[in-house]
Image (cartoon, rainbow, N blue to C red):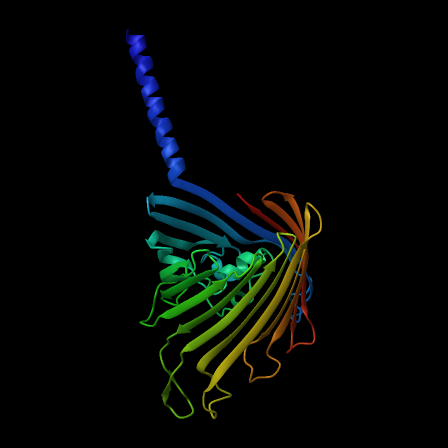
Length: 348
């Protein structure tokens, strides 16, 4: 009798643990992303950096997606990399909170509400369409025009039931992943259009309010607010090839001066990026990109051009090995920065 009772109790405990394990599996989803390279600086305008070569991790993600309740999901994502700005005080690889937000699904018909640290509308769509963040950031991200993340409230949804027109608005601190340090906010908005199969277009704008700056020339306080406008066009031919074109302009009120004897002037920044990738065979894709960036249209020889060429070997479904060359041609220097890389990228 005791043996039978022991068996029954053991089966009940095992059944309870199995149910709890299934509940956890249904509630939590874990995923990750890693990419890095072996790189070699073939040329560099800084002679000390020429011939520098190393192995490096440029991104490590670990993501937890949580089913909080019937209409609520959450995401918590950690990021690490070996960039100089991401290291600990002891010079080790640092870890930061990349995403931490709650999603209220169906806040109203066709729209979801987000609160927390989450992506901004500026280039989330174009980065996804490009698909090669492992090689380089998109142009606005690369040049710090708009942060990739911000802490605030988002509303995203459909303006057309078919999904042909979508919107995304956000109000946030304009402090990226850092804590807020002032009372000023940033206001983001974008529209996405999908008029026909394979074609997509977005228009984007944001306004960042900032404290006035004192002009050293006339000692007067002047507005220092920022405005950004951008567009993105993409055509994808059923995953055989994809073409993308992205451009932006930014205005910073009273953003620069030519010296203490000159009054502040508005700073205007422009940039355009064109890229393409094409499937060559079952396991190979070619990718190319060109950027032109001008940080201040009123100044000469302060911009650069970017050239990127790569060959993506898909070693497995979630694993890519990508030999590539990236060239930055700076107007202010005679020598380009050319780096050859063997990039490894994988998800799990």
